[in-house]
Picture 1 (cartoon, rainbow, N blue to C red):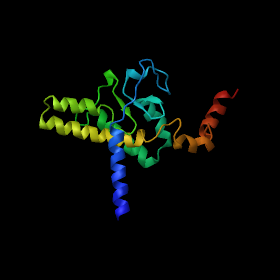
Picture 2 (cartoon, one colour):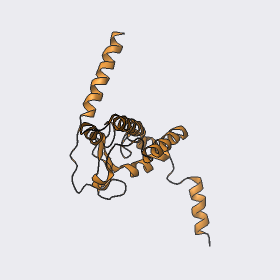
Picture 3 (tube, rainbow, N blue to C red):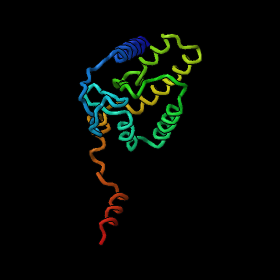
Length: 173
């Protein structure tokens, strides 16, 4: 039982440390997937240094998720897009999340609350942050370029059987 307690305390300390982590992002850094400037919209930066726009990372991660995970992600994205209770990051100003943080715009939402938000808006901001945190658990669990997911996908074909059949049909004379 004592080992469990020590392990739990170590994990909690690591989580707190990760929440305080920051990374310097150059103004000319680009998204690793679309090659557009990273500061144009919300983005994620991983400890390995790879940076991705939120929407690029989401699109890239979807094929690697199980059906249940994909459904959960779609539901979370819809709830956040519908307002999710307000608050959160401002995509126009390039909010960022370091993988392991509690979501893009968490600091912005906290600042809005500190600047006189009402109880209702605080609850809404907290709800939106909880939705974003849950989404981050799926999307930002690991870097898509150098994480375990990429290593596990090495043995998967580059072109699926369906895509191959479609390509053959398109090139038929």
